[in-house]
Image (cartoon, rainbow, N blue to C red; front, side, top):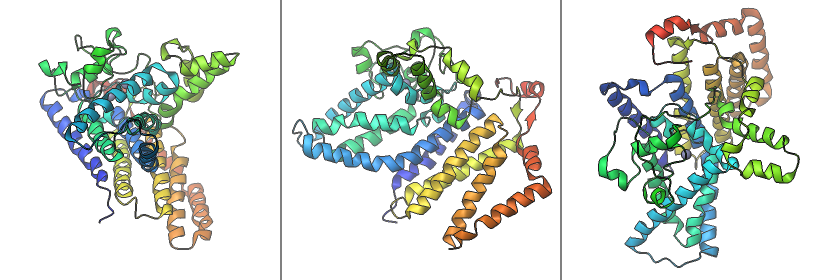
Length: 418
Ligand SMILES: [Zn+2]
Ligand SMILES: [Zn+2]
C-alpha cells in the first residue's frame, strides 16, 4: 500500500461533496440547478482529464525540477513567508493563464469546454480537458523559473486546484465583504455567465486583487445566465472536446495568407466568424429528438459512469505498481466508455457497434492475460453470429435507445429543455 497514490481519494471526495451540494440544493428548493444530461456530460469530461493527466503530470513535475535546478532566476530562501509569496504568485500566473485562455483562440479551444455547461454546480468544476491541463502546466513552469522549489509548487497547486472546486456552486449566496478579497462562488458564477455585463470578468482563482488591478472585476448584480454566448448543441464527448479546433481549422482555411491564419489562431474568439459553428454542426451532428431519456436508460448510463470512476480510482491509486499493459487497457476502456456515454446522451445510432468494440477490447485483454491472445478472433466471430441469429442490435437499441414523448416529459420535468 506504500505505493498507493492518495490523490485517488479526490474522486470519492468529489462525489461526497456533490451529494452534499445536491442535498442542500434540494433543501433550498434549488434542485433545478442540476440537469441530468449536463451533469453526466461534465463528469465524463472530468474523468477523461483525470485519466489523461496521469500520463502528463509526472513529466511536468520532472520539468519543474529541471527548470528549477538549471534556470532559476532568483534564490528564494526556505522560510514561512515564502508560502504567502508563492500563493500570490501562483494566483497571478493563474490570472494570466486564465485570461489568455479567453483572449487567444488557440487557448480558448481548450478552455471553452469548461464554459460549455449551462448549469453551475460542482460538476462544472470537473469540466476541464487534458488540453487545458497541458496549457496550465506550461504556465506553471514560470513559478520554478522564478526560483520557487518544485516541492512547494506542487503542494500549492493542489491547494489552488482544490479551492476552485468550491467556487462552482449556487448553494452559497453572496458573501459580503469577503468578495473584496476572495473569489467566491457568486463571483466565479459571474465569470461563467454570458450576460453582456459579465463577459470577460473575474479571471482570478483565489484572490480578487488581480481582477481589480487589471480592470476585470465584476460583482453579481443581476441573475447570471450560465454558459456560452453561443451554446454548443451537443452532449457528444468528442464534439465538446474538438469542435472549437475544427472551427479554427475551418477559419484558417478561409484565410489566404499566413498572416490571416495566424490572426485566427492568436486572435480573440469574438472576431471568429460565428457562422462556422452552425455549418459544422450540420455536417457532424445528427438532429436531436425533442424528448427525454427514460429511467432504464439512465440506470444504464449511471452504471457506465460508476464503472469508469471505480476503474479510474484503481488506476490512479496503483499507477506506480500496475503493468503498462494494464494501464493501457484500463485507459482505452475508460475512454471508450466516456465516448459511449456521450453517444448515449445523443442517442447515436452507432452505440451498438461501439459497445461491441468495447466488449472485444475486454475479451482481448482477458485472453492476453490468460496467454491465449491468438484466439481472440473466436469470440468476435461468436458475437457476429449471435448478432445475426438473435438480432442483438435491435434488442439493444430497444433497451437503450428509448425516449419518452416530449409532451409527457414536459409535464413531469418543467425545467428540462431540449
Ligand atoms: Zn474561464
Ligand atoms: Zn469555473
